Image (cartoon, rainbow, N blue to C red; front, side, top):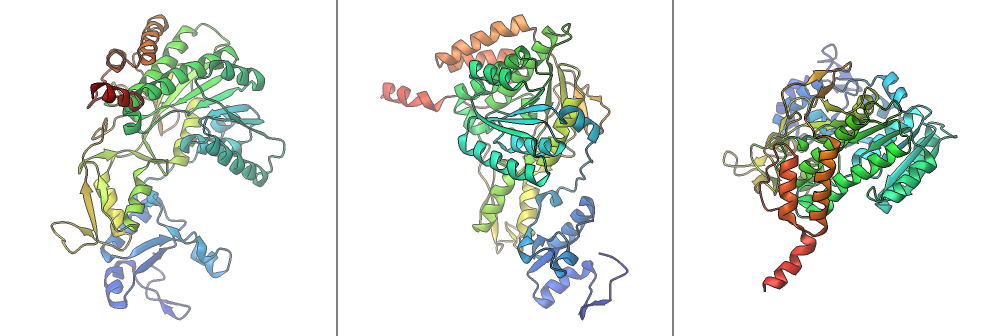
Length: 465
C-alpha cells in the first residue's frame, strides 16, 4: 500500500501495486490474500477490501507481517477477516477520566455478566481497576467461563488485590438481590441481564416480560434500598416503536427507571438511574455475522429474512466503552443514545462476506456462482429497520458518540398500578390482556404477529383436540 515500495523487490520477490490484484489473481492463480496493514485506518482497509472483492480471493488478516518474519507471531495468528473491516467505522478512543469516574477503586456489579455485552463490560471494567467486581448471572456455565477468563486477565494486569466474585442468581429474586447488594455494597451497577432474542421472546412472552421488566424493577429497587450510587440499564434500539415483545419489554424497563428517577429526584442520596440505547453489536450471541460465516463454510445458502432489511452495527468493545462513559455522565433518568453510524444493508454485508471468502454469489446475473442468498421472510416481531429515538429531539453531550433523548414516561404511582395489572395477567397466562397492557404503556408498540407462550400452547392444543 506504500507508493514508495511499488515496483521494488523484497526478499527476491517483486512488489506489486494493489490495483493489479484482480489481474494477478487470475494470471498467477492466487487464491488467498493476507491483509497485513495493522496501522491502516479502518476506512482505508475498507477501501482496499472493496477493491479486492473483484479478485475472487479468500482474504484473511495478519497483525503485522514484519512480526511474522521475525518470529514474534506465528502462522496460527492468521485469522478470519474481521467483520469490522467491512463497516469502515473508526472507534473513538475512550475518555479515561469517564472510565475512572465510574469504576476505579470502586465495587462494581454487572448483572448478566456471562452474556455478550455483560462479559465485555466486565473486561473493560477490570482493565480500569475496581476494588471488587461482582459477576451476577443465572447461567452457571456462562458465569463459570467469564469468571475463569477474568481471573486470568486480573493476573495479566497485575490486579492482585482485586476481588472477582461470581454469584449465581436470577434478577427476579428480590430477597437474594437485596441480600447480595447489602453484603457487597456495589457503588456502580450495570444491568445487562435480559432475554434479547426477538423470535424466542415472542414465543416465550411471559418469561421475557417478567425477566426484562420485573427483573429490572427488582434490581433497581434493591439498588436503591442498598445505596448503589449509579445504576445503568443496557437497552436497545428495538425499544423504539417496537414491533415485538422483546423491544416493548425493554422500553418498559426504561420507563421503570425513568419513573423511579423522577420519584426520588429530591433525595440527595438517591440512586442515579440511567439507560443506554444502542443497536446490534458485532460478535454477540445470535449475531448474523457468525451465522453467515458458518453458512458460507457449509456451502450456503446464506439466509436473509428480507432483501432490504438494514441494521446498525458497532463493535462490542466500543459499545461497552461508550456504555461506561455514558453512565458516568448521568444526572438521573437520562436516556442515552449511542451514535451507531450509518445503517448497514444486510444483503450487502452478506455479499461482501461471500466475495471476500474467494467465492461468488449465485443469482440471476451469475447462475454459475458458488453461494446463493436465500430470502426466508421476516421472523415474528422483526422490523425492516431500527431507530434509536422515539421523538426528534436528541441532545448532544460532552462525548461525540453519545447523545441524550428526552422520552415521555408515566409517573411512578400510575406506572406501578399498570405494572401490577401486567404482572397479574402474566401470572394467569392471559396474553391478550398482557399484550393490551403493553400496547397501552409503550408508545408505538404494534405487534406484527401472534404473541404466545409455548409453555402453555400444548395444553391449549390438547384441550382443542
